[in-house]
Amino acid sequence: MFLGQNKNNPTDKIRLIQKAGSARSLEGKALQVNIFISLDKNKTWSRKGKEQVLQILPESETWLKRELGLYGHTMDIRNKNFGIDRDIILKSNPDVDAKDYGWPNEAIKQMGYNSLIDFYDDLKSKNDFDQMYIVFFINGQGQPYANPCDISFKEGDEDDSFVEYAAIFSSFDEVPITDKSQHYLVPHEILHLFGALDLYESEHQTKKTEEFAVDHLTESVMLGSIRFVEEDSQQWNLKKYKIDEFNAYIMRLHNNYKSWYDTLSKKLARTYD
Image (cartoon, rainbow, N blue to C red; front, side, top):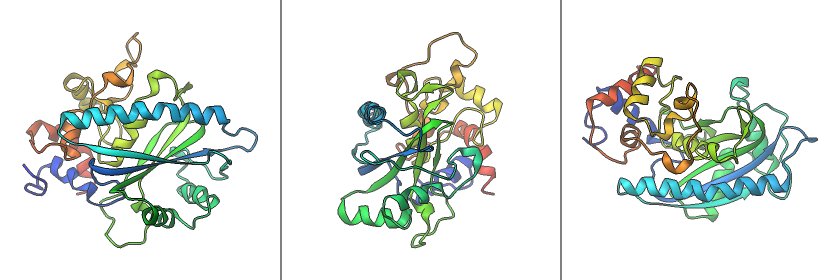
């Protein structure tokens, strides 16, 4: 089944969400923009800390290319880094629960741009890419999250929501992101920008559908660490995770729709009714 053939089932409805935005599909040339941000002038990123984060990115890229290859897709990923030689310090709060939505533009303005769109346009004029997304690395404790472009965005709108980004804090649940058990966080959040859904209980899933995903898509990177919460076992390294077939369909890596996918898409689909 191809995109647009059946909009009546919840899975194909969700599949339509990524028709807009700076990161549309997992193919072609992608530009990953890494921006380092600090929250306190007395507690900024160290140079060593930034370098340690940059050192985990090749593993993320290798894993992503491996997974895309299993579905017959390729994507070239290049990186541009900002905030390396000078500190970008926020006054606003990027924590997901703070709902302080202006913080990305505050960071971008310190880099000399008026807005995310202004930044995107400048990058586009100087770089050849099909997909572009930002990964903000924030020096602090917090839950990582992604801000994909919403289906309501219309082509031509001068709206910063076009520019898709992920926010990843230097530590999550008091474990640094450079720890091997946390390396999955970077590709997990990046995949959200291309349409992937969380498979643990969240705005995307109920507790019941989470249990379904744990049973049927055990190795999915979109399950995150939930499968280890009640187990006395060490969390996996990145290479053991996979892009599950449900999210692969959502992201258009394959077109073989299965009716059980609706179990995992129906909660989010209701919000677009």
